[in-house]
Length: 136
Image 1: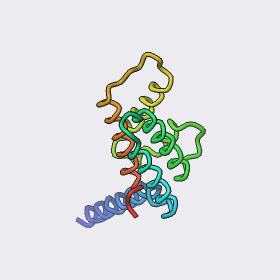
Image 2 (image 1 turned 60 degrees about the vertical axis):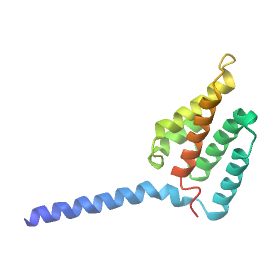
Image 3 (image 1 turned 90 degrees about the vertical axis):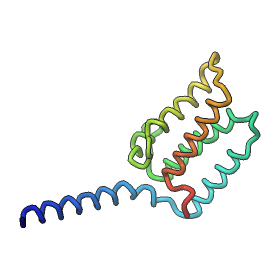
């Protein structure tokens, strides 16, 4: 019984440490930086519907900026997303949104629907929610 109690105690301590590590990067941004990111996000959301492609490009740049401010120092955004994957509810969704942006920028024959464009912009918004950008 004593060994079981000790084992359970160690498990709970381990879970607490992992939770602290997972949330460490989320709390790393100061309030002025979060407010700046929030302002930029509002500007993106307020772009007219016919400029949704521009919104996606701006969202991707803002995510890159945010991850850099959180300590991801890689040159490109993909490794930053991968390094910070523990901060996202669905890191694959974030990577897909970034890859979508790349395809939008580089594939001359790529013509996504407005619905698809809107869903990718929502994926970027979810990334910022996961990073606790809107919590002050």
